[in-house]
Length: 75
Image (cartoon, rainbow, N blue to C red; front, side):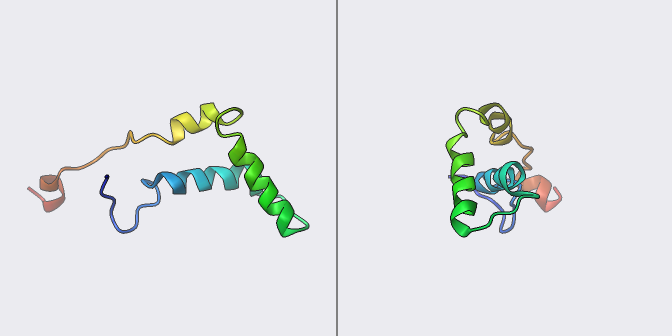
């Protein structure tokens, strides 16, 4: 289990994935129906281990800077 601050979308992996999906599949695209919209998202997610693997491997890591309790408390 990994503690995350109350609001930290940049640290939450699902938020990073959703941002990637929006950028790759949804931005500047019109979908006539809700079914078409959801199919686009499903198709993008289905390609996470193939087409998008390289981009997601670097995006979805837990390699980020953390600060110890003493740094947060000013000590």
